[in-house]
Length: 249
Image 1 (tube, rainbow, N blue to C red):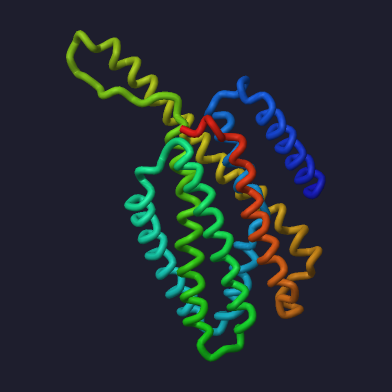
Image 2 (cartoon, rainbow, N blue to C red; image 1 turned 180 degrees about the vertical axis):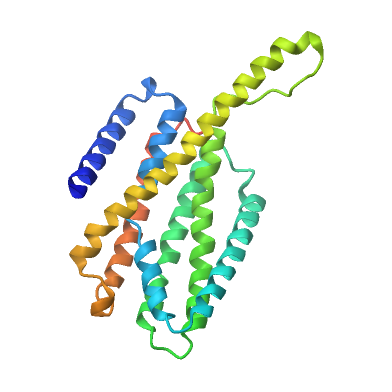
């Protein structure tokens, strides 16, 4: 039943994407952006299986897992700050599309460094290897994620006017408040498209993991192949830019 639901959902999304590509004039900008966000995050992800792998590596030293988690949070903060400093002026037009492509490629390449951990899991320096690899992948994945948030924000159909308390502008203020509510709902919906896509991606990873036979019981055999496949899917997601091309906010 779950597999049938998954296949039906993917089929529906593909049909929607095809309709959007060939009938873009009939779609509102926010609709195309929402579909883009869903499909972009619906690719099979290796995040959950890598989480299980790293848990197995440090199962006997849970404090190291906590330390890695804290460091990753700090890296995420640094990544967000640096993205704002470097790319905030490239938030519209073709330049923004180049940012999406560049950060996606960077994230795909950085994710391949997990192969180095997989090949050196018995090393005496495994903690430092994992620390460097996770710092690199966390930084690059956050860079690849932030353009989606920017896209959701910039695609909102209008901006909220500044409220004015003067009586003669009371009518305009009421309209501004209604507009603010509408924009808030629209933004929340677009952000939820990212979460929905992530759920589909997690479901899509399941059959791939089963087909490759990746599990702790067989010492994570074929985990390297799954990491490579995940990177290929990430690169392939760049093709979805056609949904928002020429309409990028």
